[in-house]
Image (cartoon, rainbow, N blue to C red; front, side, top):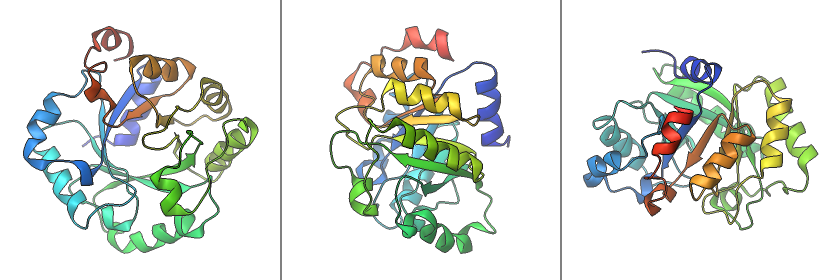
Length: 244
């Protein structure tokens, strides 16, 4: 199978924009997997699976159910070491760069090595930066760290660059699940100008207008959760020709 990361780089290099739909295993009904896959926006390029806190083995069951119904790349977006599922295609090896809790900077990562060192999963080092989305999110509660204020653009840019300088292959700007507002266009634009690795943006993307704004500002990949189910993402034909 072609490297997921190399494929992302190739698509970005050819001017394509990418859309990942995020599945939280704790909220996912495996018996309706086929219906879920059929309802995905036409422009979907990747499926992320993971959550801040997930019932033991639920991630593995969700990955297996999804892999049976789609050929889209399935990428783990784990909240902790228990969410590693060998049946997935790749794993975002996340470091919470915006926080100073060693558990999420390196602790969970060290504990995951026993599972990953002989794994066939493609491991993609990812700098994860939590941005204030206007409400407390699960990542904030579980990690015990504060998001960076959207006013503090310089710190966000410097944090993203620190991630790149430390060898991360992706930068992920996250406003948090259910955020009142998404990462601002100014932040996306300035981070994109500063780094030369792919930029992922998620949290608070509630409709097609938000999606387009993030793409135009410079996001290479946008991540949405259940927002597409509102119907607006299903009316995405105008996006398909432009971005995919």
